[in-house]
Length: 398
Picture 1 (cartoon, rainbow, N blue to C red):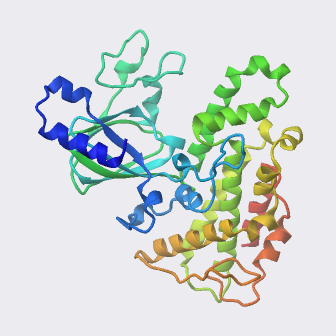
Picture 2: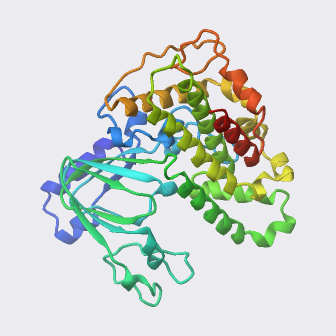
Picture 3: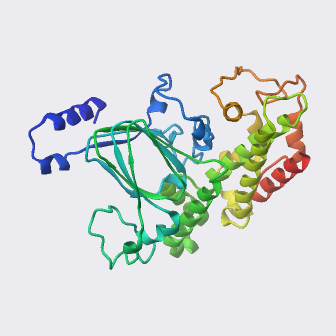
């Protein structure tokens, strides 16, 4: 339905004479509205400083989440264009029990209205699943079957009432259910960065094992079994191993570039603390890449089966450094960390044209050799082991 039809329905419910039962069955909840993406020039709000280190949305502002045409026929499809949403719902609407996409962090700001939140710590998350760890409880207020969910009665929930103008932060892996106690409008972002990147990989790996198990019986008759596993993983979880590897390669390169520049004596833009932040980011990426070393997706045989576009998107370092999309990512990353470093809203003046030999907006040298420096560290990142080597070399240079 159109937005106008949704509003008319909402207003009609508020002023209609229907019974309570009819009203409850007709409640509509507008969720996952990509408001920022649909109205980029209408700056309704700015992200609080606590939450700006948002790799997921930084990336999606300049890159598609998928590059394989078998997965995404439209690179700008709105359902994976970003993870910044507006939610609007009348009293009585609710969100079923879930943990957030990619096991990301999330924050939710109430513009108006009140919400009840029920949280379950990650250490108890297994208790909302059936004995096979396949299906989870949908609604906490239902009469949950002890036979189907034998551990559910042992759960210990944290309850919170969120008022207007308050923000809730949801850490990775916390299952939660949310009820609108009044007519409510909220802003909701999902995001991840170096501090919860391992949560993303762990989810992808666990979901991959499930996807693989479901179709294991056709392995011997399938021409590209691993490719099918990866396509199913992308469909079920939102990205696959190749999407994720492209993501971490580009953030590794961006952090290597920024670290290189903050270590130059003529650059005083960032504090030592921010330099340490870049180091931590790289160590976090290295930790995840090291867990990917033995995955089937990156064997020589399986890499031959993926598209050239997918392969070049993580392997061809020189091509990546020359891409406009990567340069845009680097500009945003640089702005975000200067914002965090200064503790105030700033706006760096960045030109649409770049010095031929440099990529960073904080570079003060006309003859910067950062590209040559990175190429000297490694020319191709074909497998996770190459990414580990690149990061080790960059950190040892510092």
